[in-house]
Length: 135
Ligand SMILES: Nc1nc2c(ncn2[C@@H]2O[C@H](COP(=O)(O)OP(=O)(O)OP(=O)(O)O)[C@@H](O)[C@H]2O)c(=O)[nH]1
Ligand SMILES: [Mg+2]
Image 1 (cartoon, helix red, strand yellow):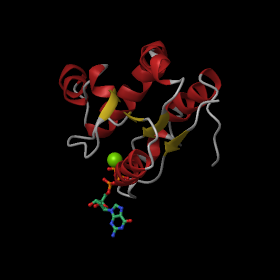
Image 2 (cartoon, helix red, strand yellow; image 1 turned 120 degrees about the vertical axis):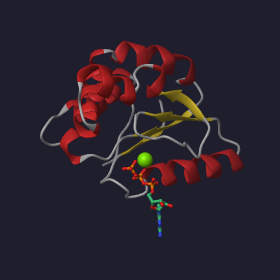
Image 3 (tube, rainbow, N blue to C red; image 1 turned 120 degrees about the horizontal axis):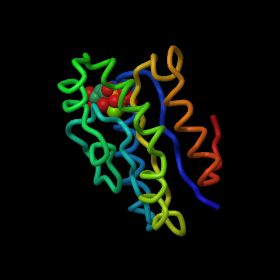
């Protein structure tokens, strides 16, 4: 069984702060943990990041190459992540045995409502790594 938190919520609601605090707490109680940053807008991460979406795709590159603004660029990045979910799976594989996983998601509402690509990424994660989820 894989344990972890998929941290979602409105912009600025404290998702990254929560991941940072929870990672400190888990470290203190001796748990192995991995924080997975899936927010391409997270510039300065306060936590040590095991997997970073920036290694797959960079928002700045997307905005330049496709003449998109930050919101359109973010939608593009999440589409790209969904289409390349194998990249994430392969990075997660070595962590699944004994790490507690914290997924830091972006907060833009359009990712969850107008477009469902972030929702689809979450569904794929839950299915593929059998992450038990409590909403
Ligand atoms: N007062 C207070 N401030 C908080 C709390 N959690 C986070 N903050 C502050 O709120 C701001 C946003 O926090 P983040 O953790 O970056 O929020 P986020 O949800 O990751 O933001 P996005 O990734 O931009 O959607 C920061 O300045 C935090 O210091 C909290 O529980 N109380
Ligand atoms: Mg954040």
